[in-house]
Length: 295
Image (tube, rainbow, N blue to C red; front, side, top):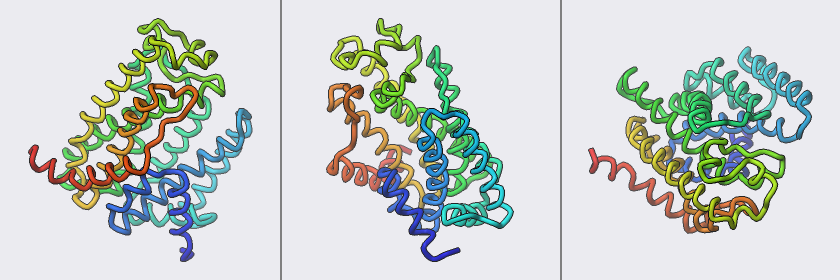
């Protein structure tokens, strides 16, 4: 390890993942370092996709090279600070190489995202992705109590992953439309008399009552998913619960921000303000006491 490697990963997190950066204050130093390493590895793969734009051949070629670099890191020859930190985290928290290759497969699939016909299709796809991320996160956080508790915690993690992905979709409508994409399922749009082309091609759709009804419905669904996922946080090791709560509560706060901009995620991008972030930290700090009271 080079002494500056952990700082390099920390800078990546603070630049790109404000919720994780805040939530990480609740983690012990070793778990925080591992979380930053894993995020930075995932971010480096996402950056490859972003840098290549619509060039699918370049994306495939560069992600293949990223897989080779991961293989070399696993074999003890890591290139650069992110892979050096990743190798340390893998050894420290017994993270399998298989789940990391699965993560790269998900990034590759995300470079050419599908369109979904139904909510069930979207939910299933999100669950598959969430299981990969959830497996990594639970290795770092720790799950006391044996295999049964681990299975239950991973089930809740999948639900949380679906909630977060739905939140991303609702927040990024405008950005996706610029690239000719809409990730809301066709059946969901049709329920409110909308079509995919309405979202992609009509900037004024954000003022349409049909859009408001759709967003209200999806936000309520997302909040219900967050509520279903929260019990899983209490299954994690005690020193990780507040961090996980901060991530969940922070992401759910994006839904409030969407309401605050009157559902206009077409021409603007909902974000959480400073005071709201302080509120997230406070709610996360109180999480364990609330969980004990509900038990």
